[in-house]
Image (tube, rainbow, N blue to C red; front, side, top):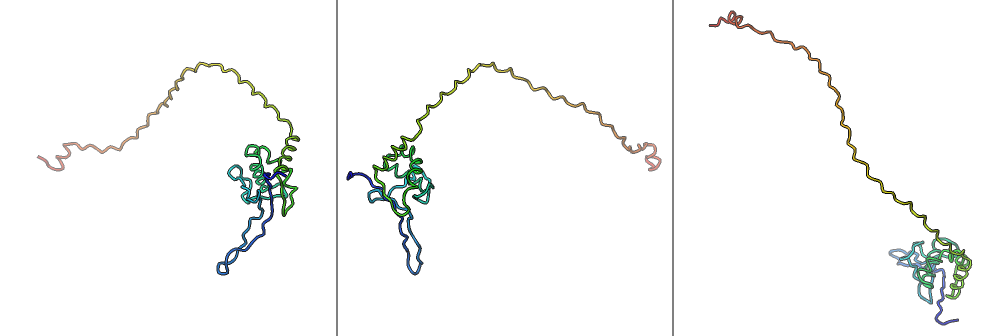
Length: 179
């Protein structure tokens, strides 16, 4: 085995109690831990976030997707990881034992070669249909809005006013005795 080959190891961390008697104790643990040659594997949340809970294995859930992506990013690079992590997750991670496991870089490469061999050949993209020719159309002449016809108003019927009787100046003189 090559001395420089990476070895990926996964294990379940045993929970531990943290705290003190006055404040109380709480359980603190990272349930699933993956190391690469003794160092914690970066989950690469900056490139893909499938699980905020961290890694998992033994099934095809979001934790397994995050683990497959992180392993392939570390081993092959981000571009290859984006291309193959889903197939790798479905093919390899359900087979890993629940408590502990280890994979070498060579085993990971062998699985990727197998995935590439079983992948359907890439289909050429269909050529886009040519766009129909654009026929210039002269703009339509501006249309004037028809004027609104006013309705003819009917003259209002005038109501007869009650008129005050006119007082004759001669009558005033007779009553008042004016000069």
